[in-house]
Length: 491
Image 1: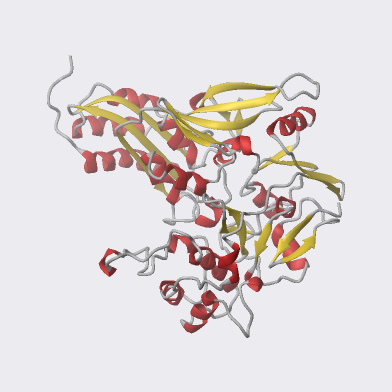
Image 2: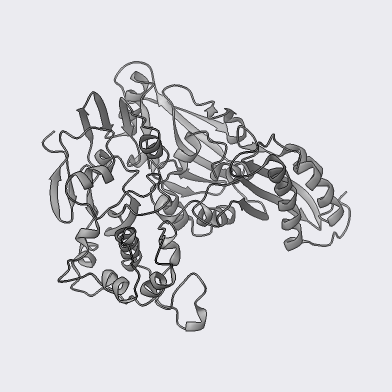
């Protein structure tokens, strides 16, 4: 217990005695670091943002901005964190703080520490470079290479975003003497195994996948925690508590990504930001989806396995993965002894969901990886219908993967989210497209079929009628941007 600690702003602080369901935000504030604020308590406002030292591809570190309100504090055991207090002081402000103050980017100041941390994460991004020509800038990237999506998870209710953007766009590059920049030349802290009991509950970070599976076999009701972007909301908003939590987000066996001749395999504990960076456009459908998934703060913690493991019908990755024909690799421990044997099985994602937040995953199993078959479809698209462009939950999500040869649809897979108790394949619409010319008549007929797929309901996000209408409109929109003339009827 005495060795359980986290380094905060360069100082090692013990965690011993803290209740295991405590969030990093509550722990920080209880320990006098009140710069981090609680705004929404569900990862939407970014007032609680902090910087976490994570591994970089070159062996050094990266300052990664995450929501402190969602992270279990024991998930930080052995790790290194910088809060707004660690960026600078009133006498010696950090460049990000200076620019925010100079541009008038703060009024009430409640959101400002979170903005400063997210902005600092982008400030220290290793591959941030200014474009060669100012004309190469767009609405979401500054002349200094600053990506505004770094701030997509931070909300301000009084200043307005113009001065905040102005501050971001005038940031230069970190000085060689900057201690936070110098820290990035060193490796990120090693992952440590953790096992703590406090307040009648237990938190464990196993040293290996085999150990995690043995724990899960013996305690099948234990909570699996990865990025905690879903569970953290349950803790904060609904007061849920886990008697026994098993942290799996750092298990190396779940953090691989490989591309072979016939498939792409993505480890279940890779964060969405890591997947986006490592794939680097290799799967265009995911490349279109991921920037629309919540915010950068969420994507820096949320894992692909977690998004599937919850079984939610409104997750954004299931429709895209259904369209890609993905399969899941499920693993469990062998037998009842203490051996390291692992049983593995594959299931089609289209057969994985069985009911509302229910799946075929058995007690003692967890998702090890997602497998996407190759080659990919020639035409793909992801349409997300939501009240906000970014940082929002989908009302409807539609993913298309079509093969069109000589103007005819030769194969089709369509994944849907938000229109039934589970994510689903639009099989009837696929059948209405295959073998038909990719023309307006076919699309009109298939759009009518697509509008009747699923059993959409009405809620605070959208009515059932609106959801059905958006399904058909998505197919028409896809055709309007990709129409081709058929050459001949295939034999």
